[in-house]
Image (cartoon, rainbow, N blue to C red; front, side, top):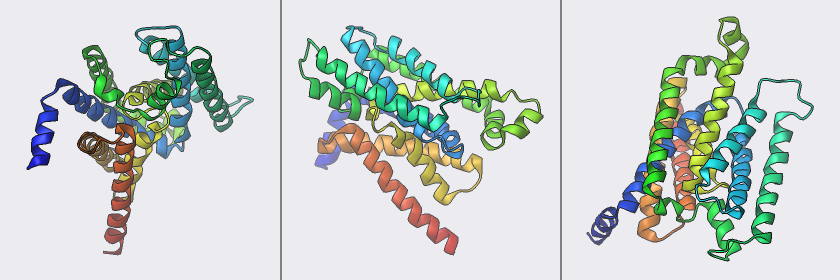
Length: 283
């Protein structure tokens, strides 16, 4: 009963309610886009773009930009477009480009924070740890952050619902999709923009190093049990929401790092889905 009373007390605070709303929306968006990313074998794009976002966030911090999203989001979107653009004749291919940008942006961001430490905190290690692993930033969201997250999340969900059939076609066979008149380059471009938006939003929940977990784990968990594209999309969304909600509640009750707790819940659910999947196949 003490656990329930403690939880009720925490839920009476608007910051906790905002965190749960934002986490649920972020997890849903990440799971939806994760299906396409995983099936097209682009899982590393999450890591690459998250590190780019980290570098942009460090630059915004050094420049003392109050609304950091106005710099971080455009930069991440631009890099996503470059990485997932339709030009197949690039001298540097996708995986190598992602590795270069990932390491370069991470190093640049950390270097800038050390050369120009945050005048308000003076705590370089704390700033870096909070940005990389999420810390408790999800519990300190302003009303403007929540509104922006809701608007962007609704846009992502609407995009996925409205263009579901085209996303399905582009995901599985771009050549066939092109032959049927679908403008694959355009949809690839739109998907890259949406992926960048989801990654920037996810940084508030789990930090830049753990973003891939939100994108990949729900999809992989769903694939252990389901086989059709629609079933995987639907179930991964449910799993993502459950893991985010449960992870935040657990982090509040046990005073553990929010981002790491959410990821660990995802890992646990994946392990359960693996076992359930084996039982179903044997049955």
